[in-house]
Length: 611
Image 1: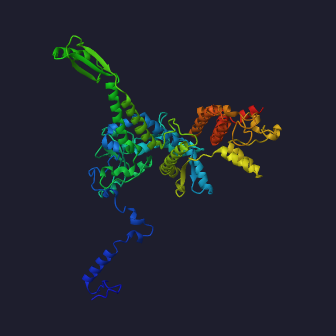
Image 2: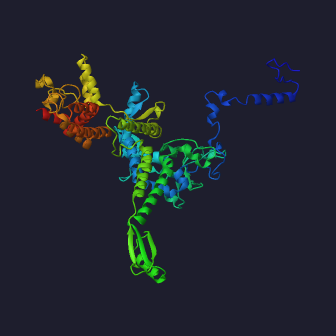
Image 3: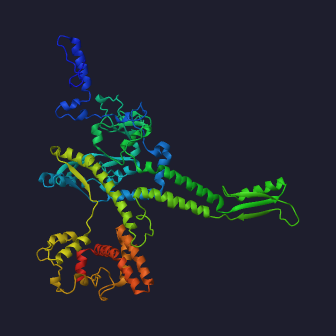
């Protein structure tokens, strides 16, 4: 009987003389160590030999598309109706919001950042990669096309690499083969297909799990095309697909939006792991909006012209037929018509036409449902807010506009981070490896500038520090202003040179100043402050010309406050209004000066004004 307190109570002690004992021992040892990763015994081997713990396709209640071994299109719109999915792109409200979001990210300034910014070689490589990528034609549109992935879930660009001279060196990059070619071509997100691994992949033939493919046609003229190899397209459940080899995949830049897994009981959406877009999220909301719109149009078609009531002598079938014939001849399609038999009498008119005007309260309700409910819900999902595309009252000092802009800023930051990752690993890394293979160990990051410095705030900080006795390097101030430093005999502007020690530079340039230093224009020295009228002029200028949505919103608030100030009769109320718009005034003032300098040509124009 075994002693349960001994650690080796159940151990098998093999008998060297007994072959059966050896077999039992081997079986037991294998069973006991089955939780051990054999790859850990091989130096340098990745855990589980680089394989999945559980293949993705096995995590669903059933397997869909076993013949093709390809994920289905995992999009609510495509699963329901390809035609509806296409028609969604014709909704100008959706496209307005979508394109605005794409442009905001595509137009961001960018740079290439080395992993070690103190390493001379890495910094030099980053600058060279910047020069190469700047040679890609229509690179802003390149980025905007990749941003189509936020709608379809995934989107790709096929690069056509060729030699170009960059910085007096021959470099490989996307190169136009003809004047009408950009060197790259977009690949629609719905053309992209991915293969799954069900254990039957022919790895010796280049098949691998999650292999990307492109939908093609069955045209029999492929042999006439000038391509690097013969196509070996495979049939899937939806089309013929050309699955890409690793070398073919390298020339494609693929951008994906939300990467998520589908529900265990929903295997038709297993392909969500390769990207889900806005279209899938808003599809059913869009269909409800379209049904409501159709209901509204039918209501207007049938009732906008009123309800026609035709009368005829009661019991006269010939009269009824004649009245219907007359009605049909003047009837617009779908108009409501009633035929009412009228008793015959001396005082009664047997034939008559009356038009009953319907109420339009129902139409107003439907219109508000379409625009204010469905329209705003869709727009808020895409942009996170509505104030960037619609004018709406927010209330003075409520902070609603700032909250809306903060939400939009978060969305732009998220999109930018995703696009950075895509361009880093699928464009920059490829260009680096084919041009500078010896730098394989250096990581270069494509960086989008989502945070811009507020020059006015920095200058105010400089002024405060200067007033406290700090020494400010001139080059830092000039860099903040975006200006260069004078050298040699070049003419310069300075208070000393103009001998205007008592008056600020703003007086010489005609810029309105704050007379009493409280940040409010118009209540201090009348010879300096421009008053509410001047504030209104500046606000109107900013509202019309400013490139900044936040400045435009502040300008609207200032114009509204100006009207309230003009209506106010109590001096105390006027002061309160001025005090309330103080932070808005600072934004307006900064935007006004910025736009004026830009429109005036900056330094050259400033010199003319000073003279």
